[in-house]
Image (cartoon, rainbow, N blue to C red; front, side):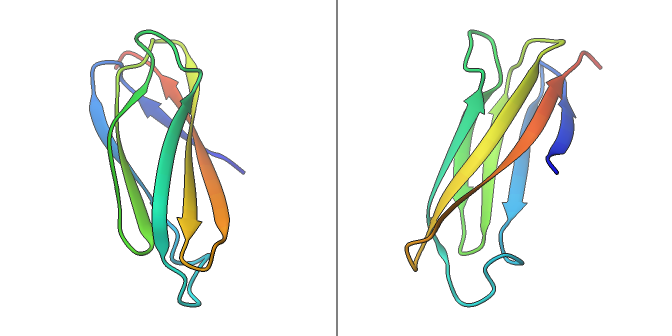
Length: 94
């Protein structure tokens, strides 16, 4: 089941995925990539990103009111596994 978030088009928010429950056997995140679909002018965009050993964070800006976006985080782990998680984001004037 995908999580749903609501964001105002004028806000800048941080969102975090905690991967610790899925990879508690010693694997660590060595790379993290974020994407937003659809990619469009004025749409939700990635303004910054960071990762620790088991958490990833993204800073999101923009968005067109009334639109729905999918924000996806794809990670590469120290043991070579690749995984991803997504969240749906509805943009609404608040």
